[in-house]
Picture (cartoon, rainbow, N blue to C red):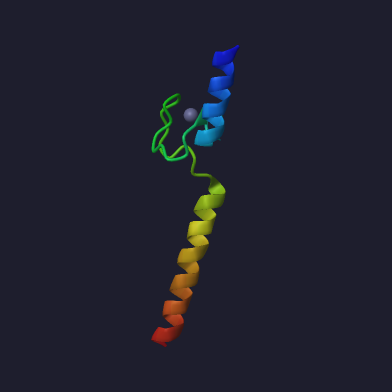
Length: 67
Ligand SMILES: [Zn+2]
């Protein structure tokens, strides 16, 4: 009983996030899922689109000042 409580507390403190592929909880800083082996398991499509949007904005600004 006590062991289960300890595990719950550890999970809460480390703020585990689900792998985008196998949905098992892993540490967000991990570069590779320890269960299914995919790379960047916590990077979602939303993150990729956010990064792309930022790149497009920067490119737009640069182009504006170049002209
Ligand atoms: Zn996984």
